[in-house]
Length: 164
Image 1 (cartoon, helix red, strand yellow):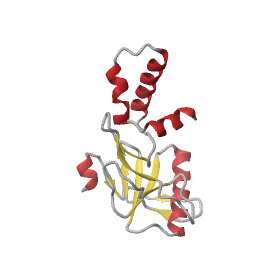
Image 2 (cartoon, helix red, strand yellow; image 1 turned 135 degrees about the horizontal axis):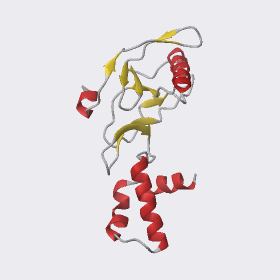
Image 3 (spheres, helix red, strand yellow; image 1 turned 180 degrees about the horizontal axis):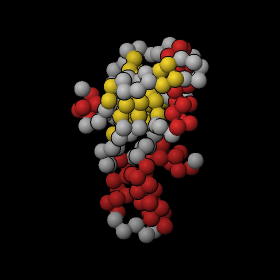
Image 4 (tube, one colour; image 1 turned 60 degrees about the vertical axis):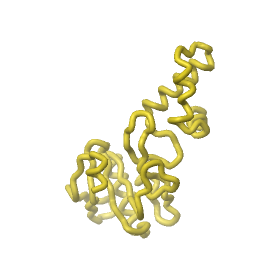
């Protein structure tokens, strides 16, 4: 119901994958529009589950087939204050961080799974960077664009991202 409410095309248990450790893995959902594979867990996954996720993400990377996410517990949406999703790229047994969540860009309304508290919509971040550069250079044509920046980006997180 959640994926339908967001308007995502999805399939359930579409295809299984052999993993390099010899086990077989069948992810719960695939979202072709985003190239997301989703594994749904009521509680945080155990070490065995995390190793499967880790190996599956490695296989996805080799084939350039997207990303796997493990969703646990409730869905804090929109603009969550806590994370409830483990990114397959960083999933490792013990202390795997719940560091991602569903987020919606406050400018263009794109919905995606991204790191909590960081700007994620590249187009909007680039637009914000362009506005800031114009302001710094003294060539800002539309002051209302600059005034709107705090409404759609976390300036502290944005400045950290720009400095990288």
